[in-house]
Image 1 (cartoon, rainbow, N blue to C red):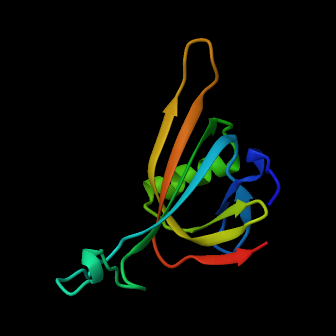
Image 2: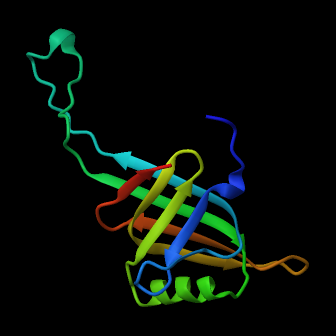
Length: 137
């Protein structure tokens, strides 16, 4: 895989619940983390005392985070609505030359900041709220 431009890693939100996705406005940095818990099944009979894990077990989670400049665009309004209404709409994360991950997420944090001589910024954190799909690019 060739080196990719960071601005091509996009976080998109379903604006209307009908599969119409738009990129969250103003994001400058984005991050996707995929995790799974391990289930340790090591016993006295484990070969050489090495840990054994149970395949296919454990909870899978995904977390999305991003930060950027406040734009007061439709997607900013949608993110605030999702947070205050505790909605869990579909989001997409597009990872260049990798694929698209899509599914329901809950906004767990929405932070706004600004300084006297700078732009207004925001940070958003999302946690997966159901099964995710992956489509390779």
